[in-house]
Amino acid sequence: MAFRHKRDALNAALALIVFLATVSLSSCAGYTTNASSNSGSGAGGSGGGVLSSSPTSVSFGNVAVGSTATQNVKITNTGTGAVNISGASISGTGFTVVSGSGSASLAVGDSATVEVQFAPTSTTPASGTLTVNSDASDATLAVGLTGTGLQAQISTSTTNVNFGLVAMGNTDSQSILLKNNGNETLTFSGISVSGSSAGFNYSGLNTSTTIAAGGSVTFDATFDPSSTSAASGSITLTTNGSPSSLVIDLSGTGQASTPSLSANPTTLPFGNVLDQSSQQLTTLVTNNGNANVTISGVTVAGAGFSASGVANGTVLTPGQSVTLTVTFAPTSGGSVSGASVSIASNAANSPLNVGLSGTGMHSVVLSWDASPTNGVTYNVFRGTSSGAEGTTPINPSPVYSLSYTDTNVTPGTDYYYYVEAVDSGGSSTPSNEAPADVPNP
Image (tube, rainbow, N blue to C red; front, top):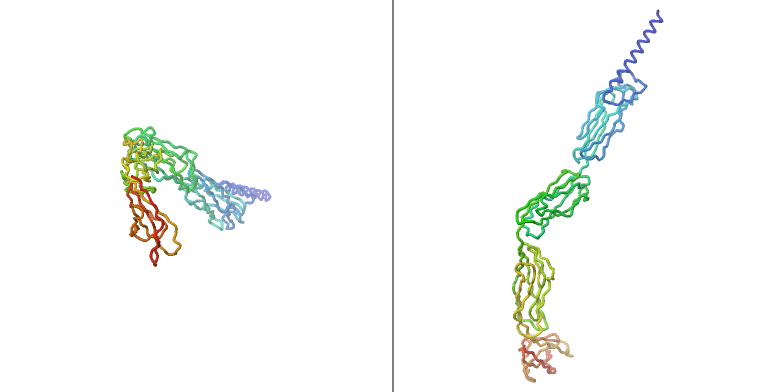
């Protein structure tokens, strides 16, 4: 009977051990547990348990905003006694525990897995902590968490483009700056225009365009009015960024086309200009209409006049100007009457005429050889008959060069000249006499 009693006690002990082991395994709710054959020191809480994690910190790296990434953290009892885990919690924006947040009991060498998820909502770098609480000697096990959300962020220099008044037949454009303020490349999946029948459109942008993080591009919104009334439209950009749809409103009014040219000044008086010389004057030609003006020709009338600076085919947009330069280089004496520059174009007031006037003045140019004496000046004498030059020089001040131009001459008159060299000792003998015939006119 004693033998039988001892055997019954042994059976009871075995049943108890099996029961306790069953309880230990069934309490790991929410964890994936790797049970060891070593049962540790019984039901746990002995103070000999130590928890460690692998990895010791978790970096999710870059994760696109709107998507998720998961990683597993393995919690292992590396101590000498069983550990009772009371739960796992998490902190930090975007971080959650997918599984493994319940209680569990780990025998020596056993491990449990916690699945952590990162779902970023912005591009701000995120950090958090996975905390596992237990009755181990290190009662709180902390695992650092980091991750960064990736997202393109589109912005624009304007969301409202007003073209104002645009003449029929003209196209106005305005530049728009797009910038990617995010940390991921911005791409375009769609670009659409409403109001295209009214004349709105765009250029310089398509669905293959990309904008690197921190980069920018410029494109043009255009308006070519189809009627003389107010119009409105929009450009919608669909991207992978935030916002995913960006709308730029467009407005403008078409008006009747009235191209017109003006000149300032409208007349160019040159006055007296010596023949064999030239003088230049300018006038500013301006498109003061509301439509483009195309210049088709520049014609000059009047002897000695020529024009430059405005070529055939020049296009002036509304408000644009170009400088017309007129040169007067008379080849004979006398005034030039009826001279003008005529500018032909598609303007309503074509041709535009600029009046020109000027008088060619004769002159006599004299030159001579240098005196052998150093430091001399020269006086020029003139008469209307040979030998009648007189004793009074025609130059108002001493002449230091070896030439002199006499501009005070009368057309149709014959003149005679000679030159004297002058120093402190007096004047030299006259040079040889030189005759000059001034034409008439």
